[in-house]
Length: 115
Length: 112
Image (cartoon, rainbow over all chains, first blue to last red; front, side, top):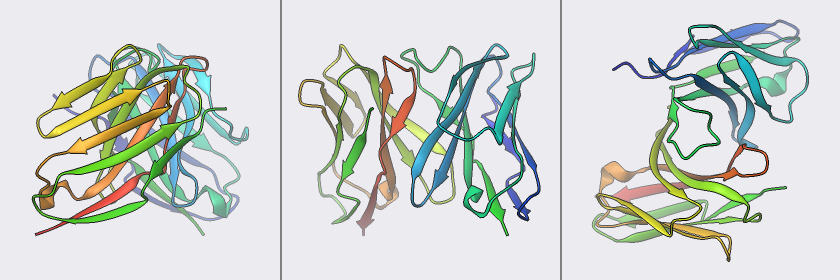
């Protein structure tokens, strides 16, 4: 069965632009969560969606937003990009919400570079 | 606020050695503690998940333990192999917020 798919794999943008990243969870999984990974801050939780509803949100500014569609695919959007938004963005899926005792399955990530 | 710390940040061992990676967390109100492996430029692979009511989990050469009272978890890797070279991350799932809080990871190099 196919794993978690994230597109695009690499992205280069300039400051002030906006970007949309996509995540397709494992078939049948209804929960998608997003994380930002940087060398300095490590892995930080962005938000979690379950059955099209945002269930949890991390401590990121409002420029970071997301949504989940009826087929469980999720997108995250970053507006007015800043240099500090350069990072590896990872999404993870699970059948239930992550606050249950269930393993998470991660995609390979989208490497975003802001110039 | 939950904080997760991993020591050491990097570790280099010869092939065949048994080793222990350490993870500590400040808030014992956790749902579970998970260990992940990350290869360079890749996503995370879940290795072991220990529920808050459990003391340990085993998978092949890997054994993870959890001591909530002391806020510690360890990942034991037996008979290490060069293919074990990767970054290992632990993450605590907060029972208060439902969020997964990650440590900074331990980068392991196993030399042939």
